[in-house]
Image 1 (spheres, one colour):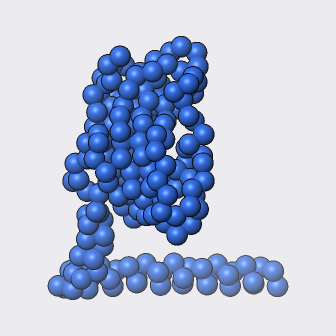
Image 2: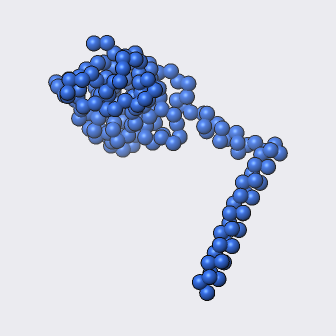
Image 3: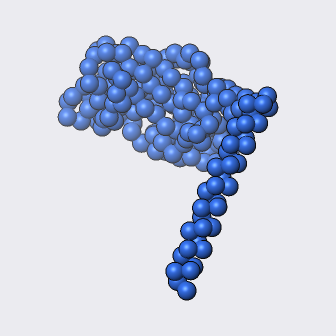
Length: 182
């Protein structure tokens, strides 16, 4: 009885695989016959990004999802061990409908020489590291949010900022900056 059930399940799974693969062929063949609507819609979603080809510079305010961001400065500082640190200072406005923090709603990556930089821990009077995790109500602007990164050279950097809500639907905003001078 168990063998019969196993054979029946194997046959059923085979039919499922064949049925699924035939469905894909039908869609592909209908697109080849001139019905390209589905392909065009998919292409427009992929290339219709609101952040695509948008040049943003230090000091420009831009939207990322339900939020506004303005990078005020990129400066050179020191981490807690005295090593160089690139410090990014920005203003962030929560225009969503929920109370949230910058860290809980935004993704930030910094690249140098094509590789992502590690976050650095900074200390001192100028370092207000609590702002990244501070919860703010809708409509509130948090000024002077800072994040620090450990540089690997003195070459230029690329900053990518994206609302987490847009991770799968939009490209991050790209900001290019020179290596900060002391």
